[in-house]
Image 1 (cartoon, helix red, strand yellow):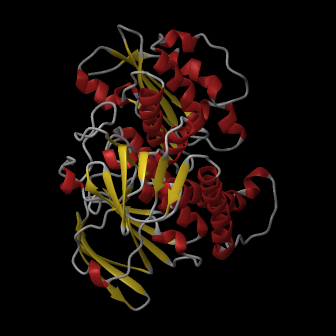
Image 2 (tube, rainbow, N blue to C red; image 1 turned 90 degrees about the vertical axis):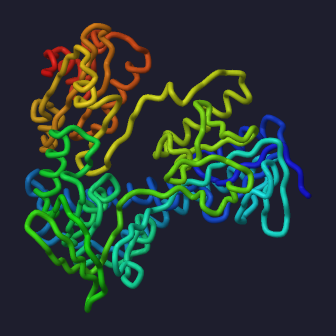
Image 3 (cartoon, one colour; image 1 turned 180 degrees about the vertical axis):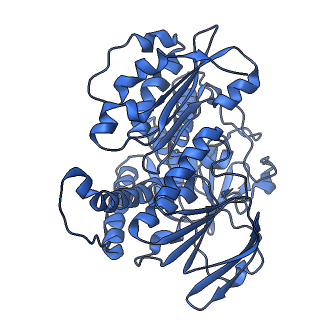
Length: 459
């Protein structure tokens, strides 16, 4: 029975750096991964999808070349086989880099197998049982598959399997109008597919403010993406050349035929085959492992990090989970997941970036607040690049002068947002940002102007 000081199950964005850190601290460590080292981000998430987004942007900008006085011909062709080859190369390099990091670390053993609990500190791995005083779970999540009539007999794609396509879909039908669905919608529309999005809610990306939701929908529809809301999918079935989706909306019962169907309706934690019930590790109604503010489970000596704990669903929150656990264990700190400020981006083009509270959330809190809004058409960098779509908005506590949240939708928003986020972590007055001198010509240079034009938030 192999004995370790620490066992990490899952080689994702929290598991790998933690395993390396534990091993370098002198602890005999095993990291167990049943599939691909690097987790979702490296293999089927951020790295491959943003590589595809980059290819799609090139196609889009090539079609716009004449707007910039550049002549490249009338027809822009996308070679999906070459697009996929580029994606595979880039994600392969990332996977290999992470694998080498593990293999080159002394005191760390990589085990490629499925792991499940045999006891609170005993892990069944094939015919072997590994023991350790400390067990860390970083097993991630997978695409949710909804209960739709006929789906078990019909071909469908998820965010993972769609990456296997090396031919352009004639018509991609996407069920789900949230972050993953919209990224693929714009991407494949720019590649040249007809794209239809079916969203069961009243709007796409429902957690955002109404003006943000409307602006994103308008952006995608202007590029030819069809969006239907308040949809109830009734059934799906295969047909000649693809798949039929039958649904109802405000117009009544509808039918749409596509060549491919993508499911983008959320994520399911990978907790159903870990043997959690054997050792009494608590989960919520959706299968996420319950953790405290330091990411400990209810079983002493067992931690859960990343998507599986339901406390964040991004690579950056997973990595922050690693930092919290590692520094609390090894550095004697007292870090908490509650110190984290909500921050994420939607990688359509232009990108949407959001931090902290929405305007609606601040308004519901009834606190006195100030709101600043600026259209991207005022930004010199945006005009220079003929990419003036979108706006910036920021909301501030009128009494403490602390920044409560911001949403940026426009060129380079995913980078610019950090100058606001960093100030939020300092809990400094927004006036520090207002008085800062930023470089011209940039998008960031308008952020001080944005906070200099704050007005009382209407109730």
